[in-house]
Length: 171
Image (cartoon, rainbow, N blue to C red; front, side, top):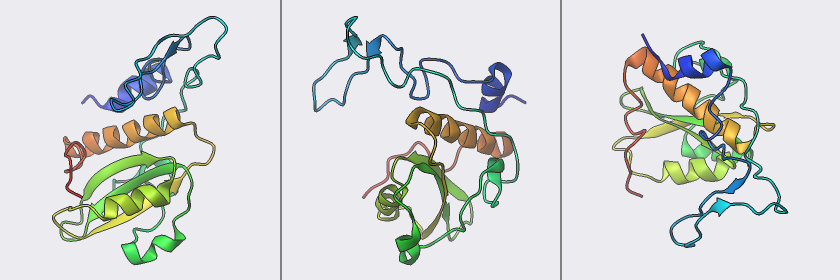
C-alpha cells in the first residue's frame, strides 16, 4: 500500500520546491490582492529564507485521535470554552466532530490560538473539539511537511482524507 509518507521516508526529506520550500534564487508571488508576482532574485538580494533542508519526517504511531498520533505530544481535545489555555505558538492541530467522533481536519499554524479560534467559528455541521501540538523550533515549511505527514498517515489508515480537509467551510 502506498502512502504520502513513503516519498518523504525514502528520500529522508521532501522535494526542494514543495511544502513551503521555494528555490533560493527566486521570490514567491504574493496573494492575488497584492498583485505582486515573484521572479528571479537579483544577485545582491538576500536568498529566499524557505530554501534549505527538510525537517525529519514524522514516524507512524498511534491512531488519528490518539494522544501520541505520529509521535507528537498532542494536547487533550478541548472545546471553545477552554481556548484561554491555547498558546500563541507555532504548531499543528486536528479537529474532531463531537457527533461522529472522527477527525474532520488537520492543519498547521504560526499562531495556534488565533487559527483555532477562526476554525471553531466555522460551520462544521456539528460541534467540534480541537487538539494541538506546539512545535516552537519548526520553520514554517517544516510545519507544512508535518501537516502533510499527518494527512498521509490518516490516508494510510482510512484510505481517505479527513472529511473537511479540502472543502471550504462557511464562516
